Length: 299
Image: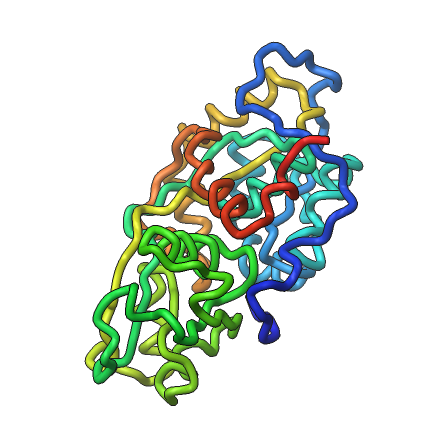
């Protein structure tokens, strides 16, 4: 996702939506709608219909066959656009990153159904090969390039790495959001470190004409929570369970359809698993520690 340079203390997400935490698989909740006759599908980081068609048409078609129900794209303009759309019933199923899921769950009571687990999906912090920085604590007083506000691997997870190392991300370091330009800024010496997801590291270096010899991986974090498919909490619960079962049963077909697009190559070798809300507590923890916990709280 392309983003302008932003400072770390910028507002994380647009507010104004109703709140309320929804536990996964809430069996006590009654179905309030019959099984739908069609589904509207959105992807939080695919803005506009053109991007959806380019990167997710093969998946939409495959999912339509697997679920045996018509599926239409619903384009969103930004990450937060999926929240009111889900609340109002304009969209039925959303493919979201871990941090977006936490927002959708808190603000729109979205129900997670299937997660797509990537075995090599963890955050790394990178420095130049000639850097004198040898540990995370050495980053104190330095400038770090991250990807975009709210990004799991490019913001929240590396922020947790800093916190775990004893650094205060608000005062001990300067964080700038450079989108895809972080590696260039690091190479030029404009920043002291750069964060990225491990499964994108080599691809980004190759695309920019850099070599792994130019950089050193300073530290790597833990395996990150999975991207996840969520649905409206107004959807028929029997239909949700049927959807989950069919997606997992036909996961090879669905994952292969995702891989048709070059942007989805990080999902190569991944697998579908039932989504577990507790796996996303790390994201909630970081929001709390950077002073944004109230954003996720129920009113």
